[in-house]
Image (tube, rainbow, N blue to C red; front, side):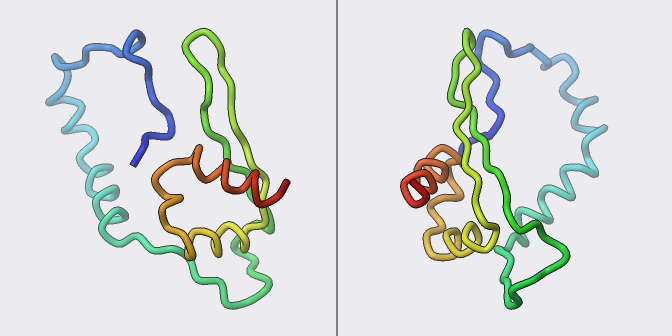
Length: 107
């Protein structure tokens, strides 16, 4: 899966000297991440109204470079978004592919 917030090589910091300390401080975060990763699901919406979710959502992906920040975006009904993911899970792999697909669908 593509990282959503990538750091270009020219801006990366060498943190190898702090690796053990960082891993120790993030141990609980890693446990939570592993739990979510191993138990992930796509929400099933059975009712037309659900107070725990927004009616619409925005998806934004970086599309620029080190010299120019640029984003792709899509604004979609939450139910349409979930239905799209359930029908075509490949969209999990790239926010850019997802936004391009949504742009074609809503243009």
